Length: 161
Image 1 (cartoon, rainbow, N blue to C red):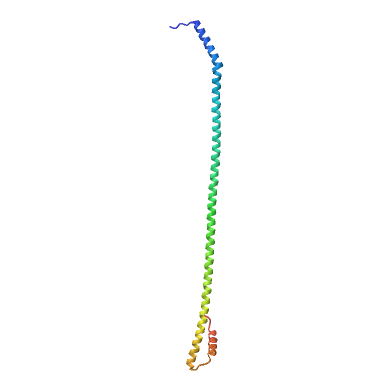
Image 2 (cartoon, rainbow, N blue to C red):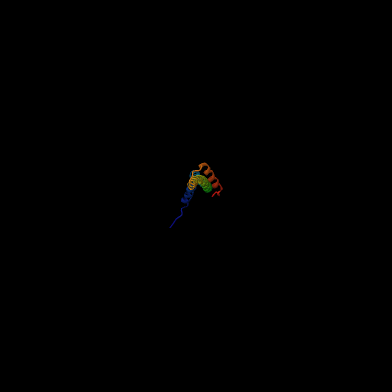
């Protein structure tokens, strides 16, 4: 079957050794250098990706903190707005109540003045009517001023009601 030829074997081994030496000197070093460079590039890319992921995580945390601060500020502004609106409402209601009280007081005073004026006019008319009635009853004309003075005195003695 197979014959082993010692001369062929020596040349085969010698050719293999020469080939390995030639490859190691000219091919293996550039190939290994290329593989090392590729490994370094991949390692650097992974390191940069890790740094970018860490930075993205930090940015995410900062954004979440900023969002939380913004939410707090929003809630604070809403609370302050509600408080301001309540105070403003209370002030408006108080001013309206005061204005209503002033108007009511002014109306009462005006009514009181009108009542007093009506009483004075009524007294004057009653005095005139009393003088006329007394003059007709006595069927003589007395001094109008004297009668008015008598009637006014009588009316002043009446209680003020």
